[in-house]
Image 1 (tube, rainbow, N blue to C red):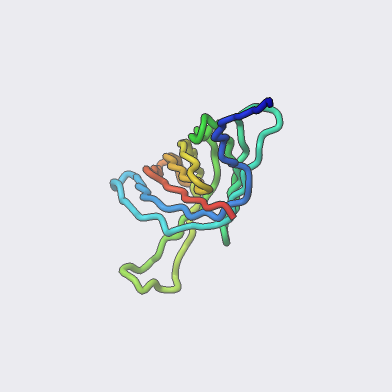
Image 2: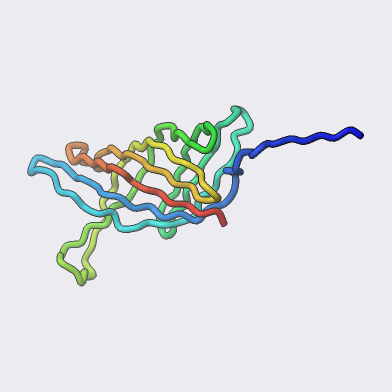
Length: 156
C-alpha cells in the first residue's frame, strides 16, 4: 500500500473584490500654522488583481463612493503587503461654519497626495496603513500630511 500526505497551510487568496472604509487624521500647514482634522470616513469598492508581469506583485484599484478612484501596486510577502509609493488627487471638503450642524455652504479643496504604506491580509480582511504627504493644487505652500491613514477592506 502506498500513501501520500502533504501538509501545506497554503496562502490566503488576496485577489478579489472588497468593500473598504478609509479613516485617519490630516494636518494642513500654511504660513499661519498647522491645523489638524479628522478625515470624514470614506468608503468604496476595492479590487485586487494579480500582476501577470511580476511575481508576488498585485494591482489595487480603489473606487471611492461619490468620489475619485486611484490605482496602487503592492508586493506580497506571506500575508504582509508593501504598497509602492503612489500619487492621487483628492477633494477635501471644508465647512464654512463650525461647529455642526453644518451649513449648506461648503467648498472642496483639491490636494495632490503621495501615499505609501503596507498592511496585512487576515481571514479575508485586508488592513492597510498609509502615510500621506502633499500640497494644495494651485497653492503649493499649503501642505498636507496624514499619519495612520487606515483602510479596512472586507472581501465581498
